[in-house]
Length: 205
Length: 205
DNA sequence: GCACGACATGAACGAACGTTCTTACTTCGC
DNA sequence: GCGAAGTAAGAACGTTCGTTCATGTCGTGC
Image 1: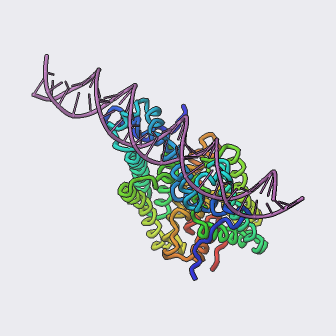
Image 2 (image 1 turned 180 degrees about the horizontal axis):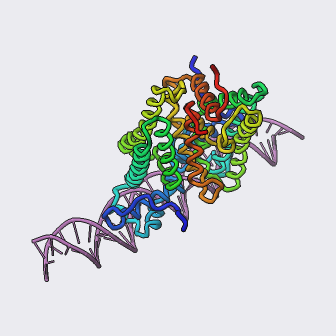
Image 3 (image 1 turned 120 degrees about the vertical axis):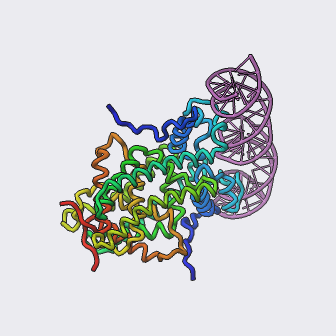
C-alpha cells in the first residue's frame, strides 16, 4: 500500500467544507495565493464558485482557515512527539524534529502554503497565525534552553538556533519528492542529526 | 552614514533598465509576482506602463531578468569569498557562508524573490535559473566533500548538508531586520558556526 | 539636416478576477 | 406539513490585469 499524503482536513460536519479547504491548500500551494483563483478552488472541490461563499466570506479568509488547520496539525504532531520522548533535551529535540519532518513530508503542499503565503492574509489573521507559528518555535526554543542549561547543547547561540533548524526542516517541503532516494524515515533521521550537531550536542554512535 | 541596502542592479547602459529591474525586485519581493502589477513596477521605476515593454517583452521575462541579476551577484560573492579563504575546507566553508549571509542581508528582497517566485517563470527560464542556483549549491557541496575527504567534516550526510545549510541561510531573508539586535557581522558569524557544527567540523575556541 | 533607432506615453483591448445577486433545492425541528 | 436554515448553482457586476497600438520625441551617425 502506498501511504501517499492523505488530505490534511478531515470531515468538519459541514457538507463540503473539508473538500473546499483541501482544494484551497492544493491550489494555493501549487499556484500561489494570487495565482490560484476561486474558480480553481471550486473546481478542485467539485462544487460551484458561488457556493464557496456559503462557507467562507472571502478568499483571504479561506486561506486563513486552511492555514489554521495546517498549523494546528503541525503543532499537535510536535507536541505529542515531544511528550512521547524522554526527559533529556537531546531526545526531546530529536523527537520534535522527527515529528516536524513527518508533517512536512505528509503534507508538503500545506507546508508550502504555510511558509509562502502568510503575507496575503488580512492583518488580524496574520498576527493570530504568527502567534500559532511562534508557539511551535517556542517549543523548540524551550528544549534548546533546557539542553543548554543541562550542558548537553553547547552552542553559544541558543536564541537563533531554533530558527535555523526550523528553516532547514521547513524548506524540505520545497524539494522533497516521495519517489526520491530518501525515505520519510531516513530524512527524519538525517535532520534530527543535523539539528543535534548544529546545537553542538551529543550525537549517536 | 547608514549603509542601507544599495540597489542590486547598477546602470546597464540602457536608460531605464536598472530602475525597472530594481523596481521589479522590490514589487515582486514585497507583493509577490502575481500580487504585483506591471503598473506597480512602472510607478516604482518612475516611468510609464507601456515603456516597460520597450525593455522586456513580458512580465515573466522581467522576473527572469531580475532573478538572473540576483543569482549572478550571489554566485559572484560566494566565489570571491571562497577564493579569498585558505585552502582548508573549514575556512573555505566559513567564508562561503559569510558571503552568502552578506548577500541575503544586503539584498533581502532580491533573496525573497529568488526563493519564492521561481515557480512563476517560463519553463525554459526556470530551468536555466535552477542551473544557476545549483551552481551555488555545488560550490558548497564541493567544499563539504573536500572536508569530508580530509576528515575535518565528520557528518555522514554530506549530500544533503549543503541543502540544509543553504535553506537556513536563505531563510534569513524572511525575518532579518536591519534595526534588530544582530549586526550583519554577528549574524554571519552565527551562521558560519551553525554550518560548521552541522557538518560536525572543527569549531573556533 | 535628415533618417533612423531608441525611448517615451496615453488610450484602449479582451480576458480573468473576487464578489454579489437571485433563485432554487434539501434537511429537519416542530 | 411548514417554515427556517443550510446548501447549491448560474448569471452578472465592476475592477484590475497584461499586453498592444498609435503616436510622438530625442539623440546621433552620416
